[in-house]
Amino acid sequence: MADKGITTIGRCYGCKRTFGFDPERVTMFLVDPDPAAPPSMTAPGTQPTPEALARSRREPVCPDCVRRGQHTRQDDGPTWPRGTA
Image 1 (tube, one colour):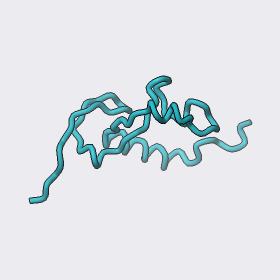
Image 2: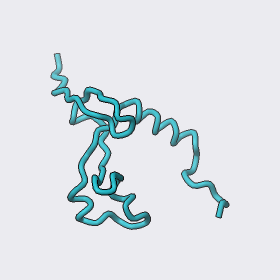
Image 3: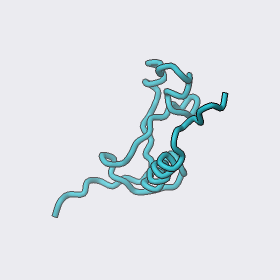
Image 4: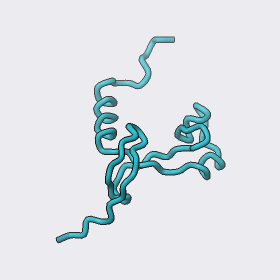
């Protein structure tokens, strides 16, 4: 029987639900704790600063949130509607 790896219990960044996961296989999301947002979102249109990346940490995302995100992205089409200026 193959080794399944160590299971960890953590909180999903998206829905805040507690779930078990393999840290090497779970989807992770980089979050800057200072503004509580992804480092690239701190200054839209710019690259994250080295300081923002240094203080950022990886947060797990549960499979349900990953599926919801993929489903939403496929159904909504383009992120920004065209011609709405």
